[in-house]
Length: 503
Ligand SMILES: [Zn+2]
Image (cartoon, rainbow, N blue to C red):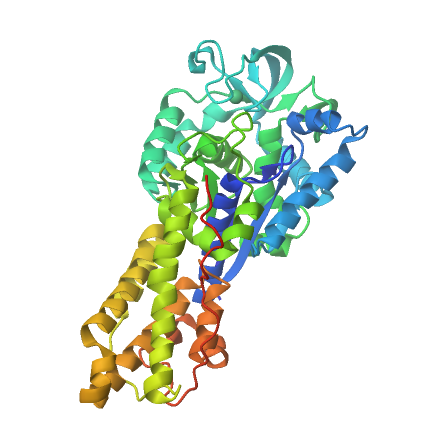
């Protein structure tokens, strides 16, 4: 069985998940569900990054005398949020777990044995928000461009990783593997950084007290990024379960936000090369979005809680909206007005109405039984959908499904089954079978995005049990809906919302 290993970034636990985190996690979830349906054995890993100085500050601010109980509580909230929103992760890694600490220690020793760790003094500007040293040249008005805060000047004895020693190898890898960094704009950005700017990095902190101790130097803790990236290994058994690790590594896909692409496409692969491990196949960076045109921020009070918005619109519509509205890899805007429009239009009118009127007419003209199969051909739709999914172009995959849906709605309008019922019952049966069978196929195409709605479509078509055991390849075959099956029209898939939601 082919395997597919994908990851989200691990999230800082100094705050609760917002809609941006949900976006990344939903994208991973859609792919995980899709790959499982395609027949792959999937490992979908997410988790929490707990060795950050930010967490220490957050624990203190929230009145915790000890840090670990705060981390346990907060990590639990992340896990509970993803569970409540039906994210189908296979494992949840925490960087304060023993399995992770063991992996980090083994990894450090491997890099050390390679001769890539040396001691030196570090003096530089450090942005606590980025958890990274920043260059004078990167500052805007003396402040971190992302966090709008002045960095602190830090001087201490540090361990360094010989990152610059991997410049040539990284460039060669980036050039030989166009799939490694996606989308292509990001590849150019990272390539230029590796070529012109990348220098050795400090990978320990003497002044910080929370983190994984440097092996052989208990006074220092490991730099949080060096520790955190290793979660992708520790989550699949590095240092604790050799068989699992051999099975899953290298990862097929790391999904990341565009702000952390350099860590994942320069530091991380160099670390792996140093430790003698293969590199992940693809790192894909998605864009950021504004909320109703503004940057999401606590001070503006416009931080969107994914649980809240899913409680109003339903989980599936929000999943659909995020991946349809914002081109994956580009920046976009999350607008509640647009969400309401797409809920009523794409979902209510196009999908909900197609199912509803198809079932109503099947009741009316065929006593609720599926008529004899008509010929049809949807192969091009599946091909377009699969190509889009394999390229992580979620909007294009949805476009392929919506094309079939809109064409079906047009078919009703042009064929006018209510007229055919009086004039041509053979043609009527062909039209109705075509609509029903297309809806069956659509339930498969939509399922990764609408995991709760798709099974409801099959239930209403009366084919839930029969479809359950099918493979993806079997599901594609035209004519899968058997003649004589009994439909059962249910509640509308997308009921009208109580009141239009304001921004
Ligand atoms: Zn910063």
